[in-house]
Length: 397
Image (cartoon, rainbow, N blue to C red; front, side, top):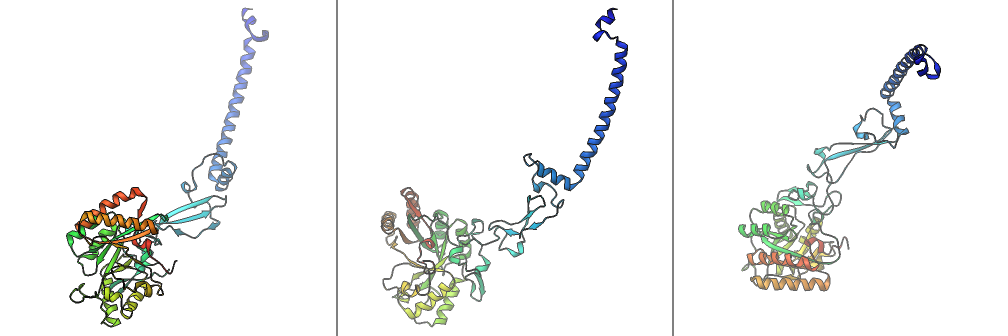
């Protein structure tokens, strides 16, 4: 009786235990059947690509592996874009639109045999990739008996643009400083390249030594470079600029031959400038063919401003020759204090007209003064730029 009083609703335990065993057996059997069905469904879903795509579309808010992590051959592409390469990358980028609307991006190594180098696939139009600054762009070179000469590329890219030092593009006060005579003294050349900031333009004398090696070091250090052409001064031959000097008494073929011989000494320069040359720059018949050749090769011409009789602008402008003039010779007196004063004067000129160009030679006093002054002037709102940034370019006024 005590047992019956504790049983729910007065029922005895024996019937309840028999019903409980029958209920447990049914539940267990049903669970086994359900588990089998669920397992089969999951297997079928994961095995069918079409069901996988439907599942991805139905649940877009659930994070899933990216398209690149899945096998790109699991679904056939319906729209394939043309492969392309970036200007500084070695990879080919292929974008495919899948049936479910997703975009699959595939990266693969570029075809190096069709590029200009391992680091550049397309040439940049203004400036050269710093990693390749010492390597010429083969599209801008022609092989001649005089050496590898600069030319305009098949797409119109000029050496003046390819080898230019990039700058901010701001129209503030700008100054270019050109230090010439590199290659004439090995110690002086080394000091100029390794001491002067990369913003300084370096000019190599065509009559110098080891020019290609020094050019490569200068370019790796960020310098824009020019080639100095020996030209006939008024007191020639008492004052002789060196071998292969361009002279007024030579015929056009001889002068162009000497010009090309000088041009073939180095590569990767934006233009040329005169070394002496007061008489030659004043003779239209001698100067015109030389400037025409320079313009046709996509180079700039910098006149050092030493001759008031120079016809550079008169002849160069109709030839579409990018040209500029030096506003000030900085080291007429080889004294660091005097050179610093000239640099301050150059700054005043630049503030008055917006820009200025100064020229100097690679003497110790000049290099030391320029290095010090450039370090100070950056705090006064002056931007030091490569000389190519300040040329008068008739083709792009």
